[in-house]
Image 1 (tube, rainbow, N blue to C red):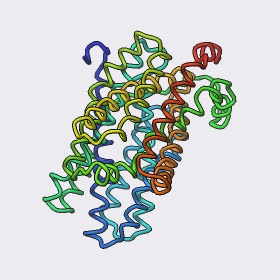
Image 2 (image 1 turned 45 degrees about the vertical axis):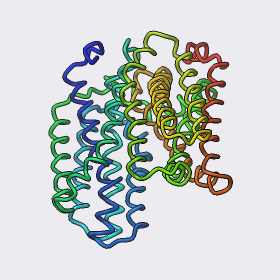
Image 3 (image 1 turned 60 degrees about the horizontal axis):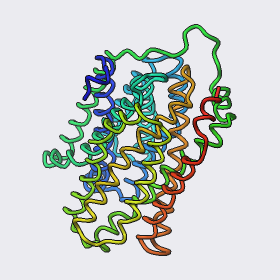
Image 4 (image 1 turned 90 degrees about the vertical axis):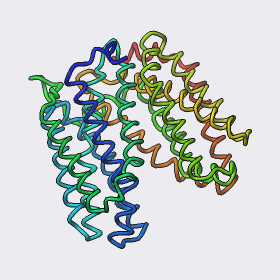
Length: 393
């Protein structure tokens, strides 16, 4: 499967770097930190949540600047970022002051900002014949790290909080050593320097950005993230699942997405992007919208797996659409801008999902998410995206 993507050693190194850093970051902030700060340091759950949120917010806010400097300087930006995160990680291990933890979490997010941008811009550059398949590979590495980290660290926690934290630091040192040997060239070689604001204005002023991408960037992540606060509630209170069954349900859906990312990416490389993208949105809407109509456990598991497969269609096809719109010389900057805008949808979704669940019913949030996906499928089916992208220059 990987041979057909024509990956070289640099590509494999970047994929391993993304997997390893996301595994550590997710293990640290999604599982370890809430337990460590509450049970070991004696802080409140609210204080732990502020630290976690600060890290993700910092990464989102600095992504545009990180992408801009990646395009200009290449590997030094990535190396510096990983080193900054290492320093913040060591600082978090040694500090017991709440405001210092918040500051160090922000610094960690700052350092983490260029990692994903460097990987996606180098693995799936503009014009590559297997770009969609490679985008699927990038998301597979990211999802594997994000999934294995929070679960796997539970097997290390019996060693004690201090030893577990030291293990995370050791793994990050390994990632730092790896990044020292990965070449990440800059995109601009001797040409005139364009300021960050001018680059952003060039992208944001385009018709294809305003009409084609801007609505989808926000709504696509909104549709997914508004389910986050209601899924545990719906699974336990409505479906009657216990924690093990709920964990298995999430694992099945996530595994389906990961397993089908590269095959679906190959599909996009061979067929019309518009057809694949609209199919993904439509199938996701149908399968997700069907979930509230059944309480049969087998049917629910089957639907969740089908939603996972549908999401595996959306991820590479949607990001291939974004990649089509990014100027070749500003790859990391463009990805940084798009990731920041998508982050706004992620930030808004949980609050909206909780509001709908409290106002109507947890199933209401599921129906609302399915409705957004269906509307996106209809929009991109009828909108002449091919003509608009062909004229984007």
